[in-house]
Length: 180
Ligand code: GRF
Image 1 (cartoon, rainbow, N blue to C red):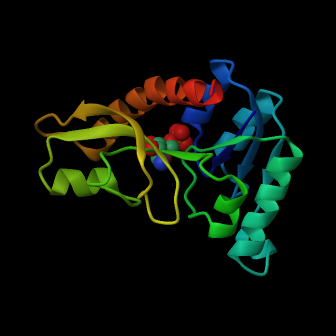
Image 2: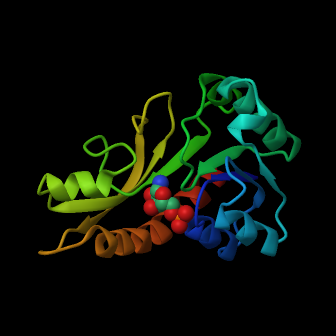
């Protein structure tokens, strides 16, 4: 049973739904995430946990963990989720939280890796799925599919090709983790 954390558009969530993976709960840190509509359209329960509704991040993340547990979630997939997870959350799902990131790790972590790698003159971006730990994109890499940078690439053009790779890789990895 999979719980997905989202903040944005949700194309990776959509692929998991379309491929029939057992997504049973979708949570967001913001009510404006388009991903919430995708979940609702698929009949999957959603919930919004805005930071402003809680005394601190740990309380918010515990509330998310409670809600995911109520939905019998065993594996948590961060798919475009833009907040760090508190240690208290990770302790509730030890070794069972993964994230999809649009660049090679550990080389290009953070919120703007495509901008960073183009500025650094790197030859490859990547779709990367990794375990989540307490750092910023520092957990062990599970699988990665390289995406070649083309001469004159814009961030947008590169992002589109990375998204295609993510949509191939993420469901494959999630299916394998579910089979364990
Ligand atoms: C993906 O590119 C992922 O690597 C990054 O955020 C993006 C989410 O895209 N962490 P989407 O919301 O799944 O379309």
